[in-house]
Amino acid sequence: MADPSDSPDNRSTAGRLQVETHGLDVIGDAERKGTPRTLFWPWFGANVSILGLSYGAFALGFGISFWQALIAGVIGIVFSFLLCGFIAVAGKRGSAPTMVLSRAAYGVRGNRLPSAISWVLTVGWETVLCALATMATATVFGRLGWGGGTGTKVVALVLVGALTVVGGVMGFDLIMRLQTLITVVTGVLTVVYIGLVADHIHWNTVSAIPAGSAQEFIGALVFMMTGFGLGWVNAAADYSRYLPRRSSSRGVIGWTTFGASLAPLLLLVFGLLLAGSSAKLNTAVAADPIGALTTILPTWFLVPFAVVAVLGLVGGAVLDIYSSGLALLSAGIRIPRYLAAFVDGVLMIAGSVYIVFLADDFLGQFMGFLTTLGVPIAAWCGIMLADLLLRRRDYDEGDLYRPSGRYGDVQPVPLLLTVVATALGWGLVTNAAASWLTWQGYLLDPFGLGGKSGAWAYANLGVLAALALGFLGTLALGRARVHTQEAQAPSPTDAGAAV
Image (cartoon, rainbow, N blue to C red):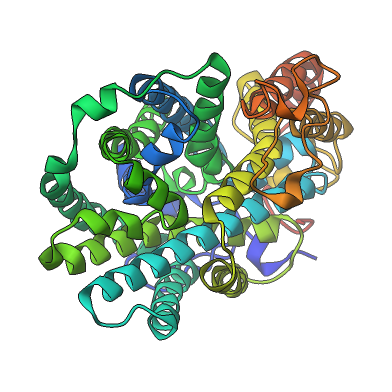
């Protein structure tokens, strides 16, 4: 029997704001609305976070110059969000969540593996964003003399967690309205912040930073990819699925890429200038990426800064918790979407407690998390992009829910590609700051790349290798499968046999 969260008959009522009842089901024609331009708001609102400034310090931490970091950042941000734009087209063509559309490549039940990985990644991201908002609030209160200790952190964590969970539980309509508000408020206050701290930039100091090696440049570039677009690819179609079928594919790609990239690019430039001007600030960002930015602010702007920091981070966390709920359902958990979002919210708060109160090395653990999960997600992304490229028709919506349909139950080739690409990728990445990742990098020595202490150890080549292997392997091995699928007659549209 079908899960109610899967059923295409499970419709939300348009107009008034209420809890979204859609789960993994296809969005009906009557509920598709908007234009590709409306995608600007959720993507910009989710990425306008002050955290973008901290990526300047993260990039320089690879031992490269300002210009190298800028080039690595621009390429990494735009390219990775362009991948999101391509996958967002699948949402318009199939009107289902990203990890349901992925069933066309992996099979209906075979897709549970990438869905589980996607779920872990999105829960991890929402946890990081919630923890950062909590730490930033505590830092601001501490500077104002209003506390800042454990009590403040607890209250901040409860408030931030509540905002995020409510947004995720309510669903699409509230998220779209919330992201529009976040875009305007955080955009204005971020410009004010930049104006207030501009005098802390010292170009002579920034321009004197020595250049790094090619390996360090590549490492920074890949880190920017995993920190931005590759952290969103597994959710890229979750919002475009509400667009009418006639919407322009180029518009979907363009507005997704533009909306998601604009704020990070601007924030990265200013973050590089700030971090490059002060070694002290650069070091402080590693411990408290948001709170460290308050140390150069006048006292009167601390409260507005807390507002822009919290709203920006909540904007990203809300999109993550919404998509993590959908990924959890796609992994085989049979509960309503809003309950899945609530469960993820509980896990998010528990993880935030660990980061805020127990962890002593945020940046090292954060980089390890991004790189480790970035490898299998890059493999999935390559497979999904190639599968989408091979298709000449829209998805057969009914068969996305039937193991006996054209997409099959389990497709062994994509699954094998994912496993092989992940094993290859993990063998080519390292992270010395995270003790739980010392097993990685096992292929650096056999491949003649200098081992775990060589020049290529921190270039993060595994992410690029997984992306390329997934893409090229699917192009080479998936053409016949896709042709056979598209040669079949359209299936019935009822979801009686849905999974």
